[in-house]
Image 1 (cartoon, rainbow, N blue to C red):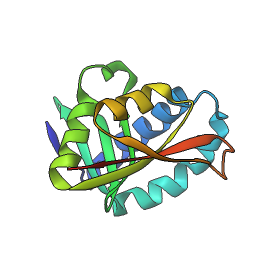
Image 2 (image 1 turned 135 degrees about the horizontal axis):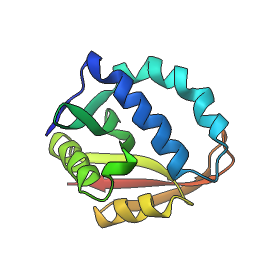
Image 3 (image 1 turned 30 degrees about the horizontal axis):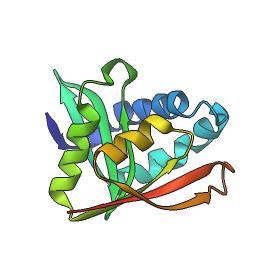
Image 4 (image 1 turned 135 degrees about the vertical axis):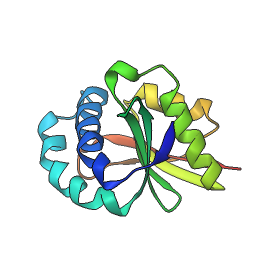
Length: 140
């Protein structure tokens, strides 16, 4: 079930955020993600967040700031089960256009978004990590 996140979800959401970032971005030192944990924890309630829930457990989430996807994160044990696609579809149902940034080396994510009709519109270097990233966009 996809639903809007509530205040009781933030602990699970942040646990998923941290673990998924560390797992998906092995090319970035995990201290980077741990060092950003508190600031993300502070700002995430201000975003539009949808969670995927099954049997009372949050299995994944998508965070949006207006038409920008801050990220889609799914528990490692729940990946490849369609949860990311369901979360992305929920965002597409809400918005007419969407954009995001994704690291070039995160090839699974790049392919996931391309399969969902996102196109690469720009390539640049992330100033914080010095990694190449794509800006990708989708429109109805």
